Length: 249
Ligand SMILES: [Zn+2]
Image (cartoon, rainbow, N blue to C red; front, top):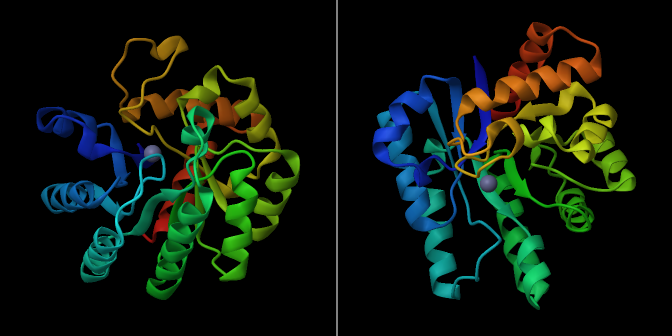
């Protein structure tokens, strides 16, 4: 069984969760905001397979200063109960829809990076295309190395930079039908690769109209194995080992 390195478990109905968890060895349950952090914490206490990450998803309006302080205070108080800071990053998709003032988002992300460094926890990043370079600048500035770029997409230059810095990526079930992701798998070392669902986000192709669940990582591992010239078992062993190592499971 595989580890789902990135899932929004708090967005599933409670009655869906037990069956979903039967399909994974562990899941890293990332959080969107404070209510989501509280729900992830509750799920991690209810199910041993669930490992919680606490953060603030970047694709949403920012908090007031007081609300932001409250979130950081809560995360500090519960830092022993989380495996990582996440999900945090920059609002790439929001920016495609409307004008977004990036500076406050960058400042918030830097605050999370400093916290991850202070707490010595990995950081789960939502940072694609040109945003990845901004995030690399911040990680390098604070000498943070335990970084996980989930569902990563980006250009050759930033890929090289991330590999030389030892940052991890994870691929979603879209690697079964997106050639862009298959190219990424070709370039990125398997030693820095994990798999995820980003569930309940829906997928296409063979996953059309299916509720996103950890079994969907099996075809991803088959794709990775075939690109890397490994057996599925060998690829699964390496990928699971990577996730255990990064998240200290
Ligand atoms: Zn996510």
